[in-house]
Image (cartoon, rainbow over all chains, first blue to last red):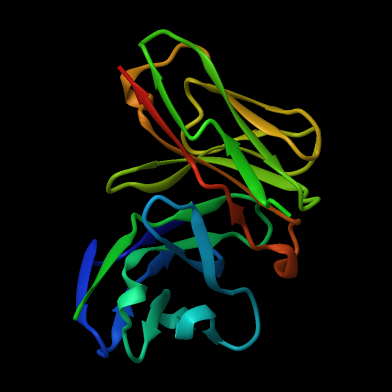
Length: 113
Length: 115
């Protein structure tokens, strides 16, 4: 069975500070990994994904994430937070041979001016 | 290109009423999904359709039915609504199964309240 754990349902950072959102997964085989962002009253939008190859992946809006198999983690980072980054962030996984996506419970990011 | 569209945007039902949520995509995607989003629980998969003509249950299918009407459209039906089905419902689609065709595109959501 797949599961996704996002540590910290709420994270606050100052504008210009490092953003770190944590995601750990549980899977019998290394899954495909995704980060999505949701702005208020909108649907989800893909930030980045890891399927195979380079373990450090870069996404939109300056975000990146690193797949660490030994730690079963896929943490999302951004060197310098911007006010426009305030949103809800979801980590998700999918088995390489499956069609179902499993989402974490989300982390709400607040950026303090 | 409208992407993924959902109707209605908002709906209030009384317990026991039925309704159908509509979803359509114009990207020629093979796979379509219905999720519900509840506070503190993230997104949970209700049903999905890997390709036209197929549907499968997700994590929380009880109380729902789906129809993949054609490649474009995937509807979700609540036969007898219950307050526990108060939620925001999202439809999503993706091109296919291969990694390069793996990105899900989400609709704007339907906010459903069951009284």
